[in-house]
Amino acid sequence: VGRIVEVEAYIGEDDGASHARFGRTARNAVMYGPPGIAYVYRVYGMYDCLNVVTEPVGRPAAVLVRAVEPLEGAELMRVARIAHPRAGARTDRLPAMRLASGPGLVCAAFGLDRADTGLDLCDASSPVHLEVPPLGDAPDVIATARIGVAYAAPPWRDAPWRFAVRGHPSVSGPRAAR
DNA sequence: GCAAGGATATCG
DNA sequence: GATATCCTTGCA
Image (cartoon, rainbow, N blue to C red; front, side):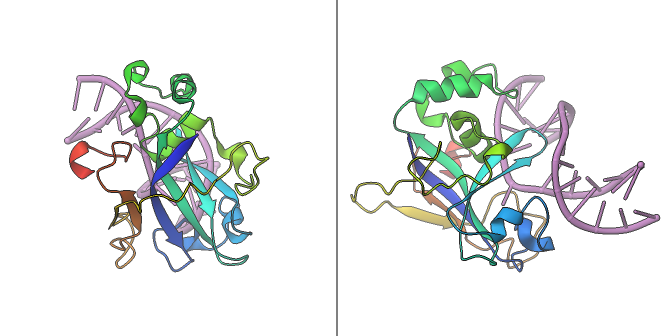
C-alpha cells in the first residue's frame, strides 16, 4: 500500500510529449479506451512505467504515476526491487521512503510490468487498484514541467503538468529538486 | 556525467 | 528490415 505523491498528466494527440502524439498505435491503444485502466509501457529497454488512463473513450490521455510513498509492505517492495534485473547494489539499504521514488521504481516496487496493462484500477478486486485516501489536510502540491520530455516542442515541453507533494521525501529526483 | 538495453515508430 | 530515439536509473 502506498500514497501517490508525484504524477504527470498527458492528454490528447495534440500533446507533443504524449505517446498518443503519433495517433493510435498497438502500444498506446489502451489510452483510447475507458478511464481508470492501467497503461504500463517500457522505457529505455529496462523499466516499466504505470499510467492511469483518463478521459472518456476516444480521447487518449493518461496520468503517469512517478512516485509513491510506501505505507504498508515496504519490505515486500524492497524484495521486489531487489528482484528487478536493474536493481542496484545498495537497494537493500535504501530508506523505505525511497523504494518507489521514480516511475520505473514504482513498477519495480509493486511488481508491475506491461502484462498489467488493461487492469481495472478502480476495481477493488483487481491485483492493483486505486483508493481515495481519508480526507485530511490539503497537501501542498507544486506544479512543474514534465520530466524527460525535452524532445517535445513548446508549449508541450514546458507545460506545468507534473504535480508533486512539496518537499516530500518520496518524490523522485535529487533532494534539491524536491 | 554517462552507459545500459530493448521496444517503438518511422524511414528506406 | 534498418535505425534513431526514448514519459529512466545507478554507478563512475
